[in-house]
Amino acid sequence: MREVHVKEITEAVAKLCQEANYFLGEDVVKALQKGLQEEPSPVGKDVFRQLLENARLARDEEVPLCQDTGTAVLFIDLGQEVLLTGGDFNEAVNEGVRQGYLRGFLRSSIVSDPLERVNTKDNTPAVIHLRLIPGDKIKITMAPKGGGSENMSAVRMLTPAQGVKGLTDFVVETVSGAGANPCPPVVVGVGLGGNFEKVAFLAKKALLRPLGEPHPQAFYADLEKELLERINRSGIGPQGFGGRFTALAVHLETAPCHIAGMPAAVNLNCHAARHAQRVL
Image 1 (cartoon, rainbow, N blue to C red):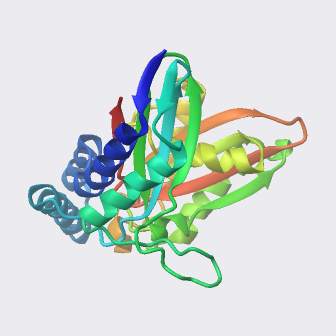
Image 2 (tube, rainbow, N blue to C red):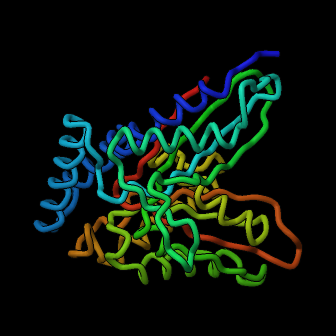
């Protein structure tokens, strides 16, 4: 059994909040560079130049990539052989978010009640997805989620009879209907299976995969490719100005489901597909 004081979690989360908001991952940078090279629209090319310059400035100056520094979404894999000491796990995570956002001068976007709309002023509480895994390590992934792209997401309770066509039409319709709102070129997370709440989680989890890394199963890898091609034929283009690149990637995650249903979900990330990770 390995003992870990919860203050280590707080410190890691605080740093990850800043890193995720300041530094765009190399996988995303490479996708933007590819877009700059291959986008036929002159306006679209200019958008890619600006996105890359924005990423450079954010990295060099250590300032946020976007003014919307998002909901703090944390995926935490906790080893079964870890004994947490020194306090409450959830409070340790939220204290990390609190410190990271305040120290990093990151915008506080969370309200304490959806109708009363009073800002908590420190971007807490976080959304925490905790999974127990074998071993004595703790893997923390921080994924700030902006409101503009999150608002364009959708869940649809498809029937098995709707099959692949029902799924692909739903995904393409969702992205096309979103238009310029989620700040394209987007990354499209697709969940399939599970149940009502599980499928939304799958769509969000899909966004954590390194950009463009195909699904390990050939069938779903081909489906991701087909969806990306269809979405990019929509003509929405970078920032909605028209062009070839409406999406940088489509990532799909699946889970077993009930014989009577085929839940599907789409969760969109803007061009700044932000995430940072640390293992304790």
